[in-house]
Length: 442
Ligand code: PXG
Image (cartoon, rainbow, N blue to C red; front, side):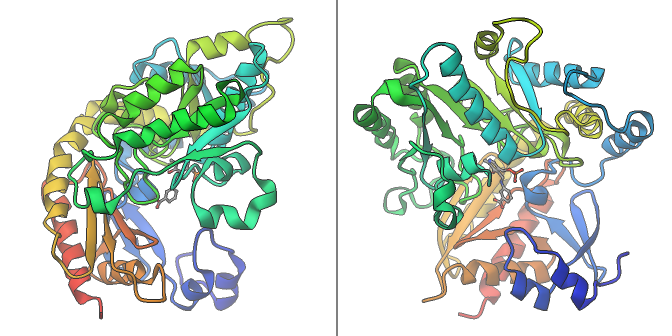
């Protein structure tokens, strides 16, 4: 099974978010993973500098999770969640609401971040409707936001390439806040930039333009992950909360990347001390062992739906695999392990180590900006003239050749090591990145 696939096999998989032709000419194959390391098809071990795709903070195949999933598949491999339920799904919902510090909140399970986002948008629009404010249909997203690839997610997202091919599929009535990254004002900021709080006032402009009575929700990533660790200016999210509350607009935090410890707190809402109405999560909830995502909704939102005849469905939404028993078992074991090994606190302790290390790259060849928050960091590199997005890929290749896997996208390289990493591994990853930067032919 682990032999290099034939050319025909390589051609057969239309790979996601991948330059397929180049990849298939130069395949990069992973055959195993353990702890913070992948094994490649040529036998080399590489450090997993992005915790999978931001999703495996415990490292790979942690014993507790492996055991829980093995046991689960032999006991209850699948159970329908429509009009039936399995006990562990309820206790997981209870645990997640408690971890979020909102024990009265409710959790709706889905299978991915994209589904979580589309579900949250549906809840927001439906909630206004069931309360008699059906005119509130607009959603406000943010430039450079990434909210997955569903029709809702690409509409509220702010990434050109994810939108331009799909114009007719955009949900109507969406508008966007400006993004907050301005290198002239904030390059090389450590943590939250001092500049940029005023940008949030754009929401007042959008309210003046569209009227609050047409706006259902604002959705933002508390820290924009995919587009390169764009950290909110000081005070921004608190002010966003105030403006939303003032106008009766729901605030949705997309915590698909930040949820379950990436900032050194259970959720980004804890880090920023801002309480959203809806929170999306996925990825780290079960260390990505089995696809799982969800939406945490405030008790008030849930209660508003609980009207009408009791034998009728209140919210027409759900997936065959919502609360899949294997995914749920993996999540319980992940939460057990996060707690037992104090891994969120460990992420918090590693954060300043990463910050110190990554900012030491200032002045290295090609580097134009460095950003960080929690156990996440990104650098920007000078583009190859006329060839956008090539430079970061060159750095990625040099790093991979030296035993470090990181993430490249546009002109950005991101680092988000597993919480189980040692301080030396975090510093070592940055040193590998330094040698990779120096090795790129300019
Ligand atoms: N919201 C946010 C904030 C995300 O980061 C999604 C939704 C969609 O999740 P799914 O599970 O549908 O992929 C994401 C996903 C990267 C990278 O390298 C980021 C994501 C996925 C893959 C790569 O930055 N984020």
